[in-house]
Each structure stands twice: as C-alpha cells, then as structure tokens.
Image (tube, rainbow, N blue to C red):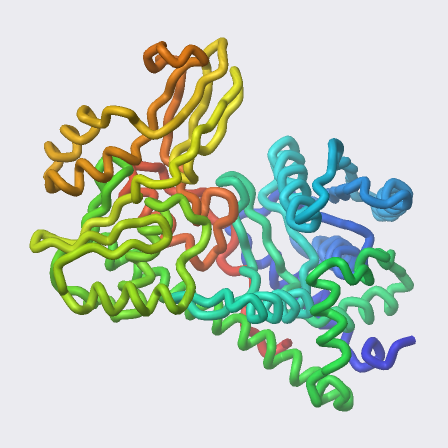
Length: 468
C-alpha cells in the first residue's frame, strides 16, 4: 500500500460527503459522474454511505464512454456492476462520431459535459457531481500559470460549482480533498478503482504537468501523518477563502454595473462618466471588462497587461478611443461607451431546425424550412436610428450598428425571414458559469434584457470546517 495512502484519514471523505448533502436547499436526485477512477468511485461510495442518514435524497450514476480506447466499454461495464451491487441506478452514454486530431482533451471534456447534462435533464436530477480533487486543482493552477492566464481577478483554479449551458449545475464537493485521502477511504472499505492509461500519456498537457509536480513535490508532501493532514486542511481553507474573495469581487462588480451601466439593443454599453472607481478599482474594472467580454463575444476577460492598460485609460478620464478584445472603449464627455469593433465579423450558416451562435454574441435559432446565413448588416440605418433614439451618440451608434447581425435566406437576394429567433448570447458564461461569477452574470443578463441564470441548488459546495 502506498505510504501516502496510509498517511491520510479516510473518515474525512465521508464527513465531506455528509457536509455536502447538508448544504442543499431541498433534497432530491443527485447524479454522480463515475469514470471508475479513484476520485469518482470514492465520491459515489461516500455519497451513497452519507445518504443513509440524509432523508429525501436519491443517487444515480452516469459513465461517459469516450470511445477513445478499446477497454473503455469494459470499464464502463465494471462501473455498472459496482452500481448494481450498491443498488444505484446507472446509465452509460457513449461519445460517438469522429474525434478531432487536435484539442482532443478539450473536445472530450465538452462532449462529457453535454452528455452528463442531457442525462441530468432526462432524470430530473438536482445537479451533476464530479470527483475532482485538490490534485486536479493544483494541476489546473499550474497549467494556467504556465500559460500566464491572469486577468483582473488574478490566477485561479477550478470553481467548486459550474453551471453548464445555462441548465445543469456541476458540483465538485471533493475539490478540497487530496487524492490519497480518497484512495484511503476506498481501501478501508475494500474497494478498488480503475487506472486510466491515458493518465500517463505525455501528449496531454495535464499529464506533463502532473509528472512535473510529482518530480518536484512540496517539502510537506513527505511529512509525517499529522503534517500531511495539516497541509490538506490548509489547502482546503485557502480554496474556500479564494472562492469567497472572487465571489465578493464579482458581487462588488455587479453592484457597480447596476449603479452606473446601461446596455442598448445588446450592442452598446454606457458607463457613467463619474464616479469612476466607487466600487474600488479592481471590482469596477472587473465589471467593465465583463461587459466588454459580452459585447466582444469573448469567453475570457483580457489578460493582466491589457487589463492594466484599460484601467489606466479609464482612470485618466481622457477623451478618445482604445480597442481591446474586439471591443472599442470610446470615452466621451457623456460617458464611456463600449461596442464591438466592425472587423473580422463572421458568416454563419444555420440549417433548418438548428441553432448557432454568431460572433459569440447572438444565438440564432432557425425555424425556417431552408438554411439561413447570418452576417454583419450591409445597411445598419435602422439599427443606428434605434440606438440614437435610445440616447447613444451618433458616431457610437453608427459604428456599433455596423457590427449588428443580419439574417438572410439561402438566396442572397432574399430579405430576412421571419421564422428565425435571435437572442442574446453571453459568451463569458452561457457555456460555463463558475459559481463565484453568478451575481455578476445575473447583473449582465439583466442589463442585456435576459432572464437570470438558474439558481444554485446548494448554499455552498465547500464549507470551511475544523474537520479538514
């Protein structure tokens, strides 16, 4: 038995599962994503054990067969057998179709979440839970650090809860637990797990980062039992504090936008000329950059360098324009205006009965009986007039209107068709919305005339406790 497994307290895993169930607003069905690995298997067993003393809950499991290895179907069957022995409903979903030659892990992740979300929706589950551990968190932070993925909120890891495609909350209750602790829990109950050989494939970035971390462990990783448990407790408390800090900043940013921002036609945002930083510089910039990401159709906020440059421009009060992240920041005496620059605008084809996202800003649903094409308007006079009527300066309205969408049927000479639904798409959050951004995302949704996002089913996913 590995020394790191002996050096952990398996009771802490069951305690984490019990505390997690106590945070739900109302009990119901919980869907566990189980690959057969140690983390997800430990989560399944711990939740099943914890539910014996938690009334109103039920458990189901789902295994996603990515069909990337010959053994994957057999491994899914092993999970099904485990669930049958435990009396837990289980379903396997397979990722069919052609697999990409590049970006395989990202594509597999997207397919996995889509399939899990579909099963959760079909079964009426409150949420999906995954077995991500603190080891995954450390690897994620190391990967983002190597890519310099920092912005107005600084470097961070995975959120403990994420809303996927606006309908399914994915929760990570074991994000503060070390993998060795989860494996100790499994061994204490006489259960094994499946080791995925792709976890040793150097072609994947996460595997390379994992190996580097293993070759350069913290000094405390080799510490005796008490010191190791104390390190794990510190990591968990740090995660909770970081999540709370990010959530607090998002709340301040949302408050700033609620007081000082307006959005016209989903195309132009206006920020009051003063006060500039009444929510504090970092939170105010966070709010402004969130609006910019929505208007620019970008899933991520600008990096640190761009953030500082924009912050200096806004703070200076100087009149003029600056472009960053596909968005024009247009400072006038009447306020700061943000709008999409009219460059590199795509053409999108949407087949009958399907939908697509144009330029990361508008969701297009084709209810017609023929294909449609979406591109930038050739004549934005009508859109421009609407913006001017809403109080947008003429020059801003003209530039913003040039980046508005126009819908045409397959015949280029035809006019826009009526059975087409055009809605706002908020790129920073409509696919993955981390819990700590929920307040800010809801504020932006309100500004853009959208309904708020689905409520989180729990009070908190990770609670700071003396038990950890």
